[in-house]
Length: 415
Image 1 (spheres, helix red, strand yellow):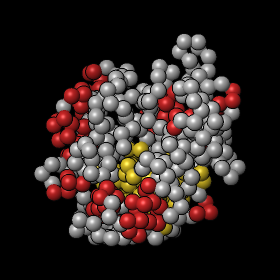
Image 2: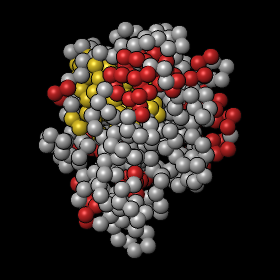
Image 3: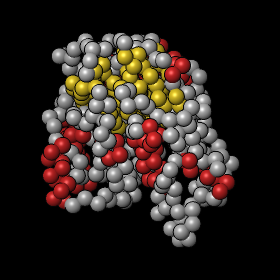
């Protein structure tokens, strides 16, 4: 549940204190209510992302918990979803096994939890991911070839830390694109790590010939809303830690984020991309899209490479007119203190409650295209005097160390 380890120092970002204070002041917006605003219009579409920490230690464990219908964590996760009621939801750290997505929907989402109304998603998409897929190589140089750090993405079994997309609206399953198998070395200008002692590539030729870019997968899931299609671009880049001075995870995290930058850019930027069906290229220039997921990168704080998330936040096609926020995150930062009081990013924008280092950061994003207006946005992080704070709590968390992030959207023209 904790993508950042305890007791490790941060890789600081290079931003002057005065400039950082100015940027933080400009970014602060009023914290949104944790629950669905009553004034939301029927024409708006709510898209959310949630790292639900519904991962388990062994294959089959999550299926057992979901089949029971009475797993406390799954019930809390479902209630958070029922309280915020997204129309389209991207879940991360949801172990991939056939039937898991249906079990969660049937036994938890369609059953009212804690007094909340049930919620039904007639459509969903899920697929295999790279976590736990063996390479047979010693990728992390620990002397063995069968550990979780030797898999295509860190994991103890194939499918651990997987993803699923739920939707009230039809999913164009024939139009879905996945990029699970795209090799990291095939990205032009890839930030492949070097051994800091020798200067040579951290990965030998055998490793580079099999190592994939995505630690889980990158999905383009087209959702039909009325007469229009919104491409939900889902991913969960590796945490930029659990490595050494070669920074192999920090570099991979940055390039996993860069994938979406190239995917939504001019066609020439995306020609190097080949999906799992052999189709080349990215999105067209007039396409509606939303990048959604736990991207494991804060604009100023934490361990990611400087500028990593800026590849999207500063992209001319990405709408950042409103940043999801919460009063609960501000309260948590003040109460927990420590490194949180030194952060450059506004505490209101935090989406993850991590121990220090790195402290609480903004890790989770819902970033629509500029062709979509942001009507409202928020983070489900209730303050401690809110009865719903029982769903988020503090470590050990009753649900997840991440918070659900949502954005309400409308198109420039009617759906």
